[in-house]
Amino acid sequence: MYAARLGGAVGTGKPEFASLCVKCGECVEQCPQHIDIPLVLESVVEELEGPDLEERARAAKQAFRQL
Image 1 (cartoon, one colour):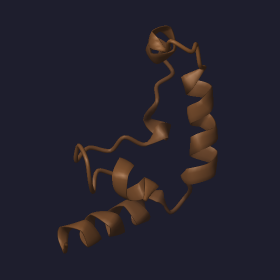
Image 2 (cartoon, helix red, strand yellow):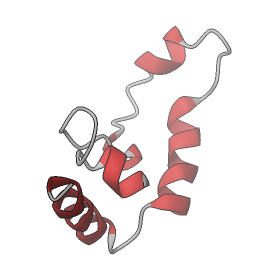
Image 3 (cartoon, helix red, strand yellow):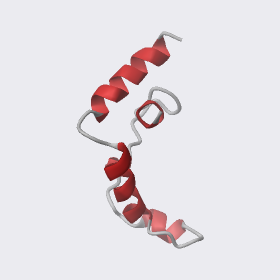
C-alpha cells in the first residue's frame, strides 16, 4: 500500500515517498511535538522503500487504473 499511496496511484497523483525529503527542517519547526521528522523518514525509507520501489509504484498505478 505504501507504493500505491505515496507513489501517486491514489491520493494526490504525485510521488510523496519518504526518500524525497530534502531535510530542510521546516516540518520540524512546525511540529507541535518537536519530532525530528527527517530522522523518522530515514527509518521509513529503510523499512518501506527498496530497489523495487519504482516497480511496485508502477504496478500499483496500473492496478488502480483498472478499478
